Length: 64
Image 1 (cartoon, rainbow, N blue to C red):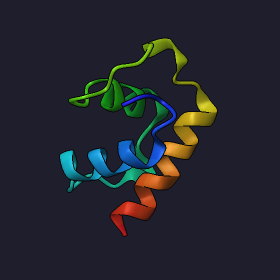
Image 2 (tube, one colour):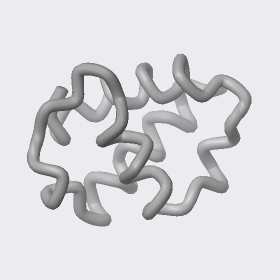
Image 3 (cartoon, rainbow, N blue to C red):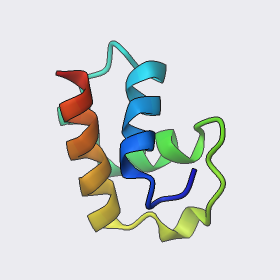
Image 4 (cartoon, rainbow, N blue to C red):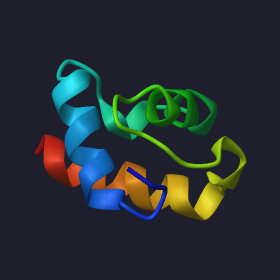
């Protein structure tokens, strides 16, 4: 997975952290959760605020 795979990342996060409320996750923690996902293979420094916002929004949608 790459940072641009927002929906795939959101699904993987929802599966890995089913009891976590994605609406209250801090971006620092979200970044760490993403780079720790199995299959994530991208530059860790490219996960900026805009992509993290998109991932968080998709994760919230996935969790509902």
